[in-house]
Picture (tube, helix red, strand yellow):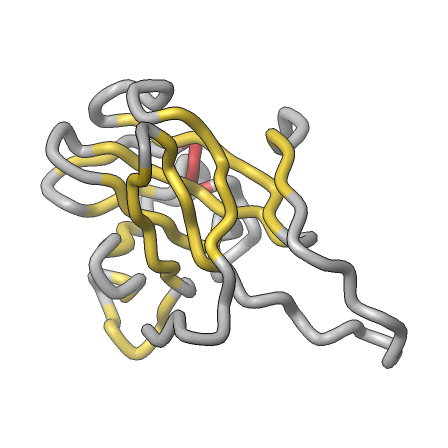
Length: 128
């Protein structure tokens, strides 16, 4: 995961995410799930590649998040689906700087060739 050309964006303060849980943040127009396992943070695309459920609301155990809709498990280390590692959710670099959690999330190319927006972050709205 190269981050040389991808800027880091602050999403939260260290300590804001409880151990064993995730939170969703919008970064550069993308939904990113950030998890804390008690010793470090990990970031993964919040949308399950199966049916689009919010992975941030799934339980975290042994370095894997379980999708709340259909119990698909994804490794946070590489985003691989535990039942078939060929299917993956995108993972993002995470670091803690001066007490803040930062993620490096590449912008997606605009769907219609329009201008892309610069980095932005906001808590994602709750999803049903």
